[in-house]
Length: 246
Image 1: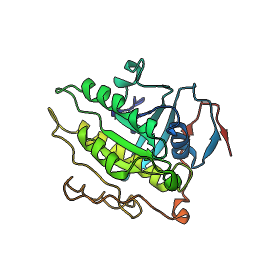
Image 2: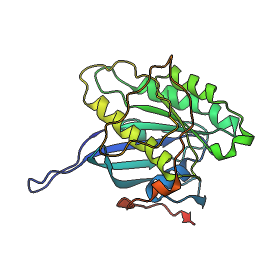
Image 3: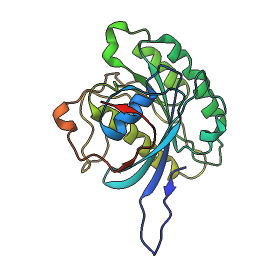
């Protein structure tokens, strides 16, 4: 869950946020995870390997250790207890070019929703359509993604792991923001409004994040950003999984 890291010698440590990346085979979970951690796009990885990585990030001028679990579920949430009690936020990923990966999202959304307890902060849910670079092969419309995310009170984004880094980073940072908000609330939190990504670069660390639009008036526009803006110092991270990175 979202909270403070262990401290020693009276030193203040940054907060920690655990993010579980869920989805069926072919959704691009691992590619998104490595893109966030390294700014690189991988072409080969082992679908049966599951691991957890750490990255030191700064979100809204506040340091945070983001731990990302790249799960290895093949055909649905099997043995999901390992991440249900661990995660501060959930990213449920599908490929817009493969209908079966979208159909496989609902079991994950149901499991996460049913696991939430009224007396504890509700971990944020983000439904993430991946591979927008394959627009010509799209099998899942944006409206379908919006509707599914709204049904479970989640946020919605569309990105591409093989394109710019900033839109991918924005999704993970939004998960941290939502986890902070939920952890700061007392009692049962109210349903979250639907957030639709806008056609502009993410806010700079010196400015506050924009307010989330209400579901009825939100516009659906895919996140776009310039490659030139994605050049920043790579975060300190612990990368354990044996990816082949190009």
